[in-house]
Image (cartoon, rainbow, N blue to C red):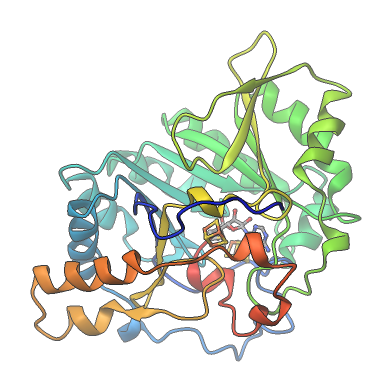
Amino acid sequence: MGQRHVDFFNRPLHDLRISVTDRCNFRCTYCMPKEIFGVDYPFMPPEHLLSFQEIERLATLFVQMGVRKIRLTGGEPLLRENLHLLIEKLVAIPGLEDIGLTTNGFYLERQAVQLKQSGLKRINVSFDALNDPVFKSMNNVGVGTKRILRGIKKAMDVGLEVKVNMVVKKGVNDQEVLPMAHFFKNLHVTLRFIEFMDVGQTNGWNLQQVVTGKEMVEHLASQFSLKPVMPSYKGEVAKRYQYEGTETEVGFITSVSQAFCADCTRGRIAADGKFYTCLFATDWYDLRELLRSQTSDDEIMAAIASIWKTRTDRYSETRSSQPEKNKGKIEMSYIGG
Ligand code: SAM
Ligand code: SF4
Ligand code: SF4
């Protein structure tokens, strides 16, 4: 968690995460605890969501400003009706090099063909355990592993590139690290272990529940020969390794133990059009208001540029020294992972 002398005002805006809904059919304990996100939880009313036309317009402007990668997220993005129609629009944006989607996989078996046909090439499936009771306790709605595994298989069968994300919580699913590694290595699927993060204010996070990337690498090294892989671009968040003698990779996202704010090139748009310059931001800029008020493309781009240029975000590098900054943080299900 050491600090580096870097120019925090000079990080290009390269990646954009767009949340298409704040709703989810899971209640993962680390993201949307059931006690808070109960039946009465006030999710966004439909008229607050950006329409596909509005998302397409914003995405086009962001690409003109240098964004090369867009990831659709949520909430659970596959709950957004006709998502494939949005993907078709995004695929057609000149200059956009990569579109990804992060999903809990519940509707994947049903939607994989349509997603592939819309032009999507890759997806990340969040899947935290092979052990059924452990998985059920983490998603907290009783969904078993079989359904998600069928979704992953279907996605692979239709030709989508699949990566799996596993959030690791100490004492909850850390005993699943090795079985998950073996299982997905055999499937030739990249598995990425994610340190449990203090996003939002409701998931009861504490440092004792974090298994660090370093601990996980050491654990894996007891059973596998791992070869480090160079980052493929500046700002890549996962530390990547290859299982020796294979093409299969495994990654570690160490946002807590080894912050990467200095290279952070990622902006986020919530489903209601609020623009955040950091996963842990407490302030936002309302792009929906601009979209719905006859503002020109040039004016919108000027507004985005001025927000991004003055960005000083480095939450992960300062979380331990400034705990008071934790107040007012946005929930992961709202801002997208
Ligand atoms: N519902 C979709 C899913 O679960 O893939 C997309 C949205 S979810 C908020 C995006 C990613 O954030 C998932 O991979 C999830 O595991 C991760 N995530 C959520 N809460 C987290 C936390 N407290 N720490 C680390 N990762 C978290
Ligand atoms: Fe839903 Fe994804 Fe959050 Fe789990 S991590 S509660 S699936 S939004
Ligand atoms: Fe980027 Fe904020 Fe995460 Fe740092 S804490 S890597 S600035 S999103």
